Length: 368
Image (cartoon, helix red, strand yellow):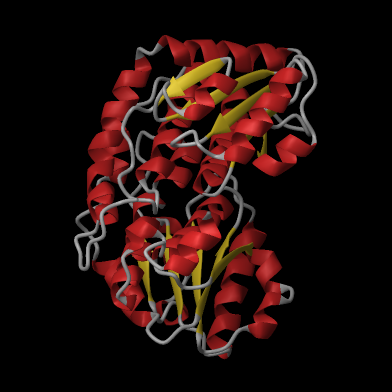
């Protein structure tokens, strides 16, 4: 269990601050890692054989696995139902893959039972298994044919490094598959917003008095939305749920009121249909009519589409992707802003995000 700190800076605070430099270190090291070449070859082989390629994990690692799936699908140019599919680990365990398939697990510490069992079942069925984890000494390593180590362990249980690290692996792996080597300085520049916590602090203040948070996104932004909802629940101990933009417009707002916060995540996704912008605008307008404090994490182009009156609780405007490929930029740019928002909400609520509340005997017993 992480050592308890009664006030900030928390371990989560320090992990967030360390991430830009960590991302650059990791990307540089992976560029020469033969394990990345081995996994890239396994992905190519499965794709050429039209065999299923799946990613899996639980919690934060599940969301990272979703990001890896999106990055690989983009790098391979897969369409028409052949996309790399992200599944929750329990689903992977219930329907193990057949021979020739590939299952890529994500587990920061390698201790997640469902992920390890899914890898075991897939391997027993003749599938190739891979694991992205912090160390070859992690318990999950023995269940994987291929292993990629990130080597730097998150010190907080409210994982931030544990989310970003497999995303960087996915970016480097996608670069290997597409033949476009990632620009590591551009990756760091996109992430180097850790000192700019004013917008996150402002949103946290705007959510004073809320009793739950709804987070919305579309496309790859839905992955970021799910991660933010988890971080708010884990770190700030505030109930939160993530939904697609259209899903929120079809029912969930019936239970929303002025004590329900809303965060829209909308990056400048390449090829986004015009209807998505229209539906996101409608969601914010509906929230205003309900008196909901609404905030947003937006790309520059998306930010220009919404008036300030639609985000009374504040907004974060993301840096441009620059030389980072579009899908990678949409996944990476919100990482630190969403983590900072969760950390600032924890501060505002007077809770330590590092321990997930397990200093409470009831929480510790429930987890056990």
